[in-house]
Image (tube, rainbow, N blue to C red; front, side):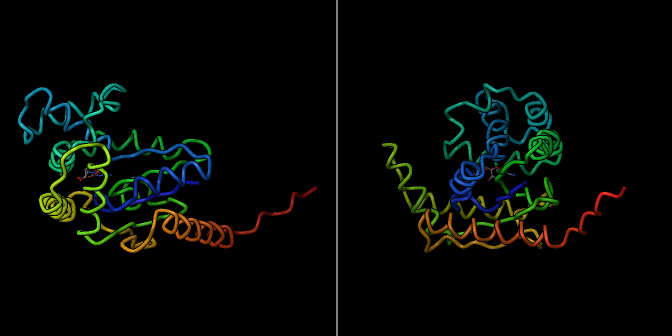
Length: 221
Ligand code: C5P
């Protein structure tokens, strides 16, 4: 079973995807970490973030060490990721890895921006997770404070809105729900309530696709 979870920054899609992966015993890929790794490499090397050649070459040569860099979750890296992720060559370089991950035997849970639209249009269940921008800014600020880091909620809100705009307006794989995605607005939902709603959507999508499958022919003599 392939479960695609898309949505904007700090919508809660990552937490939801991890919980669903645990629940169904499926491997999970946070596809944002790939774009963050590309951006992080450029920042570390002091390269220009808009240098398409450098970004594409970083995307083609990511290593497990890049993917486990603790600085990946920084605000600055998230911002930079939304710059490199608009480059078609960067997206193309990361496509096969994501598709292969999704199509492994048994399936997987992937979260990102274009999982249901580009990476896995054939996913068994698609969720588009949203929340109002001020709610997302508050969640992000709480997360930073819990880690003992400074958090200016007003500035975080501006960054979130700028990132939403950049992700939604880029010509390649823009942030938008797949036509067959179920919208889940978590603005007023706890993590547990969002999880329960997601399970209900997935169970119903799976039953529906089983019902639509042509019946198996009985084994003949
Ligand atoms: O989800 P996360 O905040 O880690 O993503 C960082 C950035 O990577 C996003 O703002 C977006 O620009 C980009 N991204 C993307 N496509 C994905 C996942 C992330 O363009 N599938």
